[in-house]
Length: 107
Image 1: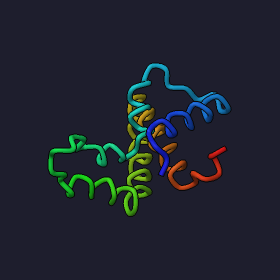
Image 2 (image 1 turned 90 degrees about the horizontal axis):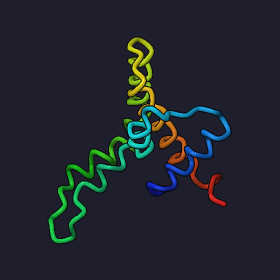
Image 3 (image 1 turned 90 degrees about the vertical axis):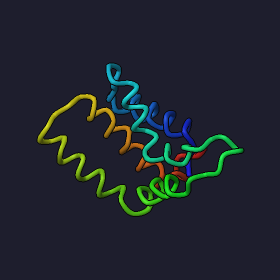
Image 4 (image 1 turned 120 degrees about the vertical axis):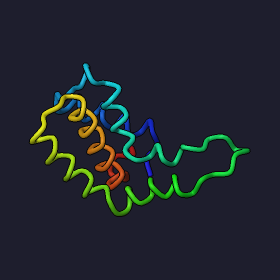
């Protein structure tokens, strides 16, 4: 799976080619580019016991619910335009694309 920086760099390349930027919502967008990966980093301290239930949330979203989440969120966004949510969703979509197709982007 691509790491955090790869997701950010991927979007920079997409933005440069597409002209789609979120300068006013940069933080929200960058959070979206990480998708559900933040659940994997919930426990960073090596001396603390990891709560597998938190990690499992990230795993489930990646493996089973990512497409459903995106479709529902896009439908919601169509009915309730919101620039902050739009930036987050675009970031999340880029995360999803790169996770599904990483090898074609590795040079």
